[in-house]
Length: 115
Length: 113
Image (tube, rainbow over all chains, first blue to last red):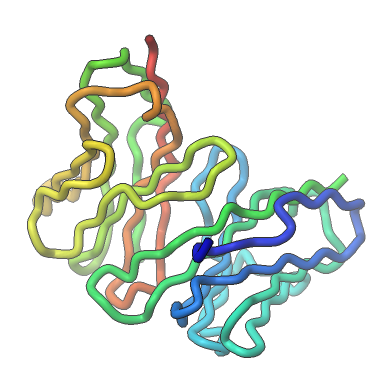
């Protein structure tokens, strides 16, 4: 399978714990995006990388959130001191940075439940 | 700033009847527009895209959409609904350089037998 993969698919944690999610993009894609999706809503942009550089962060990304893409390949999203409001589906997508459409290819998501 | 409005949160049709999912956008420049579909427990899948070429865009599974600049609309249609079309549909507006995808709130399509 050469699509976008995410790990884990599901994560249940207690409030106050730290969690880390991983995303492996399509190999030739140099852009990588993180989104958050809550029930009944569309995905909301969190941040994106061009190769290893984090170029944009949404104001939704509080200080407890950090994302990295150390070698321009896979990316991690860490949430520190989780809160119940962090419960959501976290989506990763990747794309090329040229072309007329910039189509984003999405992974299956990581569903986070904070108890 | 860009924004997307999906006028119906839920649409219900009978199998074999036409589907219309409405989308209006706001953008300060000529945008790219996408429709994505999300089936339960599956990832988002691209249905079709408009990128300033033909205004009538054909996508997968018999879906098509028409870009109407004067109405700032990009409605999604299908002549005949199938049970497998039941899913959540998202209209997306994309900025000039493709970094900023703004999703609408989604329309849930139900298909009745």
